[in-house]
Amino acid sequence: MANQFLIAGGDGLWSSAGNWSTTSGGASNGTHPVAGDVVAFNSASGNANMTVDVSSACASLIMSGTYAGTLTFNDFLSLTSTCTFLSGCTIAGTAGTLYLASGSGTW
Image (cartoon, rainbow, N blue to C red):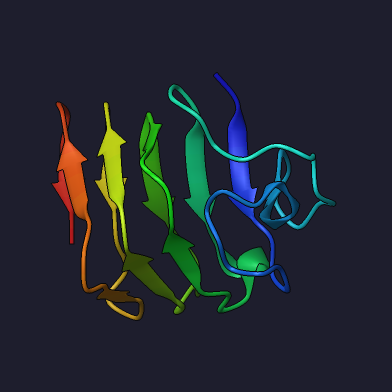
């Protein structure tokens, strides 16, 4: 299990390794989130938008701080633990599903 933080300034696709860092505000780690990872969108992410463009999985999706970007679901995202959205963010998409297998969600 690893932490994956959204990086501001990437291409905005979940599957693109250049959008993710193992530290908040850090450089790209060359991988994208996979099952078991904790994914964080936070103040260091700016208001970067993210599109779930491929069927994906992670342990948790946590938005915190002043993050106010848009998360678009164009494919399936499965979470096995927790999900936290902020009131300032936007959830969008024409296709796709957020599946919370267990744990809790906060909107």
